[in-house]
Amino acid sequence: MVQPGELIREGKSKRIYATDDPDTAIEYFKDDAKAYHGLKRGRIWGKGEINNAISQTFFRMLSEHDIPNHYLGPIDSRQSLVRRCEMLPVAIKVRNRAAGSMAERLGITEGRPLQPPVVEYILRDDREEHPLINMTHILALRLGTPEGIEKATAMALRINEIISASMREIGIELIDFKLEFGRFHGQILVADEISPDVARFWDARTHEPLDMDRFRRDLGNTEQAYQELLRRMTGMED
Image (tube, rainbow, N blue to C red; front, side, top):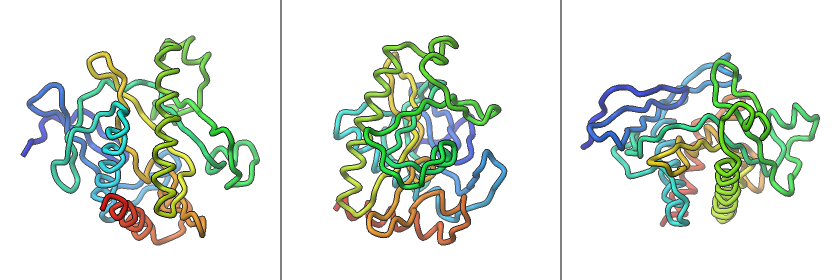
């Protein structure tokens, strides 16, 4: 089994370790939970294992649709082997319904459908609480090129189509999600994770959230919601 080496970086939900191969890294998923820029902290028991399994499923799905990504394979219940990317400073959020900060910021009723989907650009900066930025910010601050951002945006919208369609088959609606990207030998890849920590999933019938909003809003049964999402997705792969 691949053994973790030096800790490369640590975020609120994962640790990234080096390996003996400079082109690969180990992604370790934690049980830690943080919300509101770290003002609310806790632990969701078993979340790391669940998010690892969910993220693996989504990345395999992207590979089947020829979407370049960092995932290489499983290591154990909490760890995945990934390509070691240089992370890009801009993340992309795709919203299919108004929820969370967007609904609050614009005074929109939560759950309002958005057609076409809304695309938002986010500066990856923990110190500045990940502010929203636009294309002129990106160009003026040299955070990316028009061609690179256009390519990443097209990938994000395509991924939205792929995941939304797969979720509908198991009675779940993809409300929104955030994607992070990395550069690997000159190629832009989808990296980081795709999980209920960084995406909103609602039960299609009841609109009950199956994601981090249960922790953020003290709705209870957070562990059970994560487990239910994984249970349905596991059936999807049978």
